[in-house]
Length: 65
Image (cartoon, rainbow, N blue to C red; front, top):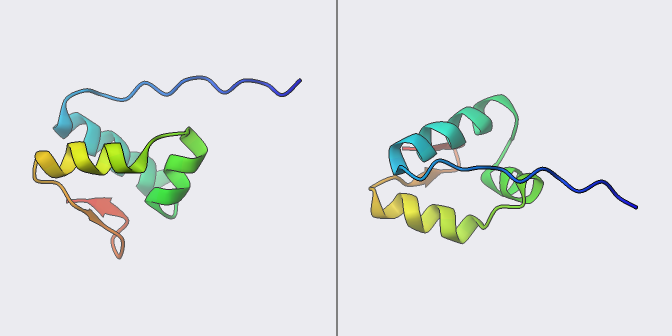
């Protein structure tokens, strides 16, 4: 039986969420798609929540700004 992945706890605060995701993107993932796939996160939900706080994902920088 495959081992179940531990659930990733994301910060609720948009500024903390952007900081958390940027750290993960910088240190471990080449793209937001790779991060979302690996951590089983909903990319649309994350980008929508951060867009509401004036953050946009910039693929060329692999970062939320």
